[in-house]
Length: 337
Image (cartoon, rainbow, N blue to C red; front, side):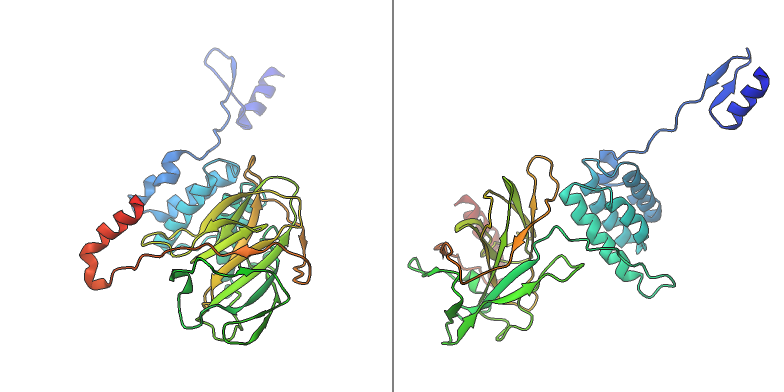
């Protein structure tokens, strides 16, 4: 009877018999967790075996999606997949995404999922994303524009007068060209992270656009703004992000600002009226790093609002390409200020 029991355990891989006839329990299989060496620069990157590196990172993310290194792992995985032109399985990404809570890791994994699903459209089995991946992003916006100088293709690079008028969120505003501007609704499309306010906007390519949203908040939070370009962001009338006239080499697209207020809160964004202008916003718990579910009130320009004053900025002139030798000194002078 003892022999039969021993054989069953050994067949299951749970025990082994020593020469002395004693039963020893086999060590449990070690879970493959993420380590700094895998996410900083995966070892297989240098052997050129990008497929093995991508598979290894997938396995480690599946085992430990809550790792503090998960966000960096997704960035490394995307770089390796691009280098090797590797098609990733959207179903595996979706399974990991469902167990991901960190806001930055979720952002990167969600972008991988959307791209992988798009690439599968012409395959034998196209992958359909279930639900709205970006349900926690601000959805209900209003947009006003074009506003301001319509002869500048990059107005946020221009110096603004110190006596610039305050902007109230009135229902109608007289634009610079003498045309009466009206706020219009702009809804984030289901399944998309960004809104693109310049689509359908007259005179696209000049002037400024204003976007307005009214998210509610239960306490303190971090306002996350995804903005590939120049812009300025106000929260309840206070300027919290000034991204106008960013200097050379400042290519960041994700910005965080601490905010508070039960709401409805007034979120106002000023962008340049470019065809490719886009923006997304989320609220993040500052303690856990998790994206918060957002309750929103529809923008109502008729109601009383705080006024938003554009900051007076002095933008140094970017040297011409022929003055390339002076660019380093120019940049160093800006940093010193």
